[in-house]
Structure formats: structure tokens, C-alpha cells
Amino acid sequence: MTSATDARVAAQQALSQVTGDSEIAALGEHRAVLALQIEDVALEHLELHLGHRLAEEAIRRYRDTHRSGMMAATERSFATLTQDAYAQLKSQPEGDGEALLAVDSEGTAKRVAELLKNTRFRLYLALRAAAYEQFVTKGICLPFFCDDIFETFDEEQTSAACRVMARISRTSQAIYPTHHRHVLDIAKTVCDAARIVHELEWMRQS
Image (cartoon, one colour):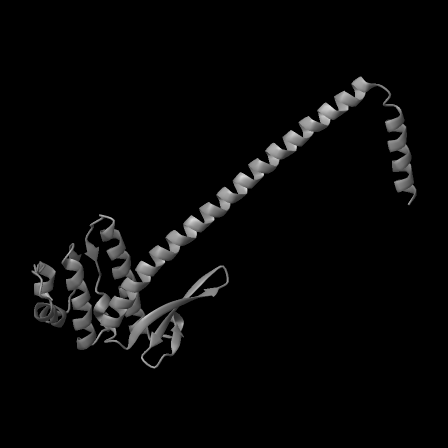
């Protein structure tokens, strides 16, 4: 209360010192200048704030579009690799990021860590194939290279994996080195695209 009274007294004393019209005009001009400066700063802040919000929205839309394309491509490959046992993928917020969930034919959503090792390998292959397809759509056509990733697959799963590789080979080059003869036989049967087989010396000697 005392501080408020002191402030009021000080204000009254300052006001009483204003005696001339020139001083009043100068104070009025100074007040107008300050008002314009405040307005400029406010407009600049508003422009920056709106620009920041628009940039964030554009980034979010880009990520959603890119993620949607990536998710759809991964779903397609994963459904092929699992013979439609997992025909849907979805994500859910988790901490600062998102967790990928695989939905089985009964509608049960499973985290990646809850999948069998064999199924996880197929999911990783589906993710790699989907990411590669995204590169291809942007005109980046490097060879798609897998290093014996089919090692835990049975014959049906290997056939499905070969079909994914064959699909990739229609737009670019898919390379798969293996020391398993049955994989080569399955690939020759499944892949309808042109195949080039290179048998290395160490393969023939093993």
C-alpha cells in the first residue's frame, strides 16, 4: 500500500512539473512514436509466429504424406511375406516418437519385440523394400542388396520373399547372394522377371 502511495505521489509531482505546451507536445509525440514502435514489434512477432506455425504445419503434412506412403508400401510387402497373416500395420505415440505395431488376421496388434524372430526378419525386409520404393519414386535407382536374409525362412516364406525381390527388379536391380541351393531353385520358379545367376568359384567347391 505504501509503495502504491509513493508511486502516485511521484506521478503527481512529475505531472506538476509539466507546465508548458511544448513539453506536453513533446511528450505526446514521444508517446505516439512509442506506440508505433510497439505496433511494429507486435506485427513482426505475429508474422514470425504465424510463419513458424505454417512451417510446422507444412513439415507435419510432409511427414504424414511420406509416412503414409511408406506405411502402405510396408504393409503391402509384409502382407506378401506373411501370406496375409499380418495385413495391417499401424503406429501409436510412444514417448517422443512412435511405435510400430503389426496387426494379425484376428485383429490383435503386436509390438515388434513381441513378434517371432522369423516374423521380425520379414518385417525388416518389408521396411527395407518400402524405403527402397520411396527412393525409386524420387528417381534414385541404386541396386537393392540383401545378404542372405532368407536364412530363417521356410520354403513358402522364401517364395514370398522372392516375389518381393521380383517386384523390385521390375523397376531396378535386386541382388541376393546366397549359399543355399534351394533358394536359387525357388527363385528360378517364382521370379517371372529376367534372372541373371552368377555362381562363384567358392560356391561350386562347397
